[in-house]
Amino acid sequence: MNVQEIRKDFPILEETVNGHPLVYLDSAATSQKPRQVIEVLQKYYEHDNSNVHRGVHTLGSRATEAYELAREKVARFIRAKSAEQVVFTRGTTESLNMVAYGYARQQLKEGDEIVLTPSEHHSNLIPWQQVARTTGAVLKYIPLQPDGTLAMEDVKTAITPATKLVAMAHVSNVLGTIHPVREIAALAHEVGAIMVVDGAQSVPHMPVDVQDLGCDFLAFSGHKMCGPTGVGVLYGKRELLDVMEPTYFGGEMIDIVELHSATWKDTPYKFEGGTPIIAGAIGLGAAVDYLSSIGMEEIRSHDQKLVAYALERLSDMPGLSIYGPKSGVNRGGLVTFNLDGVHPHDVSTVLDAEGIAIRAGHHCAQPLMRWLNVGSTARASFYLYNTESDIDALFHGLQSAKEFFQHAIG
Ligand code: 7TS
Image (cartoon, rainbow, N blue to C red):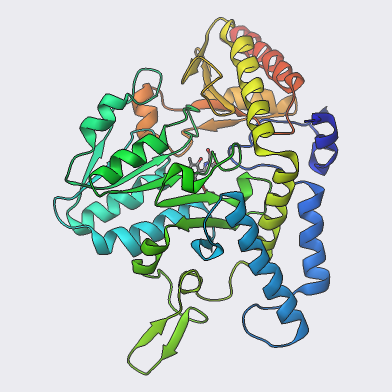
């Protein structure tokens, strides 16, 4: 993998920010977009733009073909058995809400248990709280080990015959922990529960094979994997998508409409009411082509190298606390930290003055912040276009932040 060549694909990396070359370390929030994706979007709007599945005119057929081809590309990317198991959504949040509203709210009843972890992103937490509120199901949490990982013994204790649904992130957006979702899915299936995987931070960064993982649903977002914003995916097992209710009702998702009733199309169309996310899906197809041309194994090992280097450089810095597993081997490409006595927003502001973009805040994981006993944290996250020199820039930026605040505090 030639990172210097890859960097040339990303026009935004030529930006200067506050007089410095941009060092973009916020890909877990959203990734940058390569020219190959931007060009496909531009070409679509300039040459093929039309609504899909409707008109019989030439542009309509071209747009429909491109949209359905994108679905096939995504299906191949996650090794789904068929393209019909790929539903285009607005992103991970919408995908998870669709499962909560269209599946769990219909299928769960009082006393059923939903098993989660305390490190979930709010979008894999609040939908299940809503399901619990309306069905009387109960939320149960697998405790975290001190480094944020899960102990299999605790997973086995949490999953019982009352469990109907297990939901967790494949990779935590704060701790970088990679959860053993394949093993956990097998435990869920032993008791007849389904496994919902939040793949927002895994699908962009490592090979994900839904058949190998055995997950029942997988949700992810296009914008974190070199694709445009506003598009994401819900993958589901066919038999579950067949019983799952649509969330939105209206044009294009129907089969026959009478004055007092209607029937739906088959999956995935029954979930894509209204004009779908046409350009977004086509852009996501281009992103999948781009990532595949580089290779997900290569991207994963690049992330691993960067995170190991970041942990090595940052762990020696006095006054810096790093959260999550201490080794880069079984960890996603991000490092979350705090600098003693300095608010993460201030850390981020000082770094921004040097052109370095990181994220500061609660990362949509307030229960996890409480578990870490902090209000917020700073986070640097890496992707295929980052280099060790980006991490060196972070290290020097953090040193200047430390000096600046030590001086300011006196
Ligand atoms: N799940 C995880 C694990 C995430 O990291 C995110 C977004 C989501 C769900 C929601 O994805 P969306 O595309 O629907 O918004 N995470 C982050 C983040 O860590 N910083 O900004 C967004």
